[in-house]
Image (cartoon, rainbow, N blue to C red; front, side, top):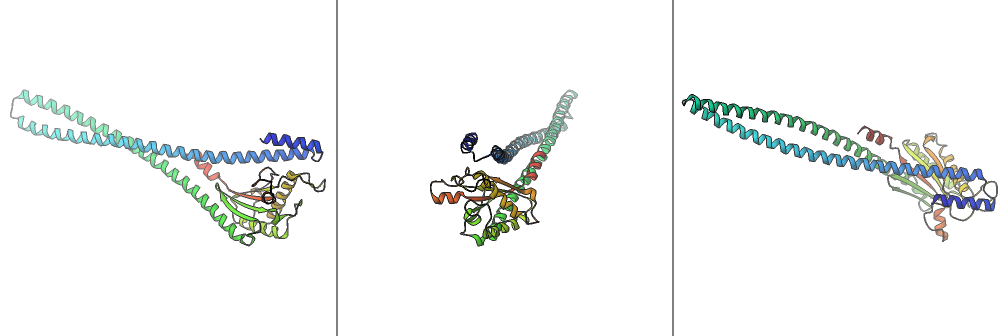
Length: 320
């Protein structure tokens, strides 16, 4: 699908002579990078989910093995108790038979020694199984602790993103009803700003009211340095008809608008610029169909996507 879109853009560019090959190539590369980054994040999330499922399966297998060995140990204990009772019985018989002939006495002594040997063998087997059970139990506890720690970290990340979303909602409360929304999805927080709050038609200059909203977002991000920030510019599917030379097309316009938002954010000295990424998506990630004015208005927007860093979780998975 991406290749078909890219080919269409190339044909349209050659037909209209409005897009230079370099700009097209740069935008295509940026789109490919964003696609790759999205795929890597999806793969990482899938990898974490698979790792968690594997740990749960391993835990269930260890529990099953633990129950089996425990049952074997209990059987050995029962056998040991029965052998002990037999020994006591034989010892009583031995005492009674001491008065009988030497032959009968020797036979009882031989049988007694055999039972003692069997009893010692049972004791050794029981000790071996107990050691094996202890090792399995220790491994089970260690793995369970790892799983618990991983779940705690993931829960903390989710709680942190929820708190971040609540903080942003509170900070941006004054812009409610002006085309700004904040929501949480798939472990990420999305701040969506419609163009009516940020830009005039065909422009990438941020309005004073829009700048106030971006500044408030930047304040929250400065207090959360462990958050990766992706700023995406989006347009509707109307062909750009602005001044030639300033803006080439919708790709160019969406990229310049995203970069304009980044420029405002980096004015806040508390933000780590390495956490910021600007990207233009053009008309190719709409929220609604572009067949109504309302739909087009919803599609002309800036998306600020906030993602927690997963380095700590990845490290734990490698250690398990």
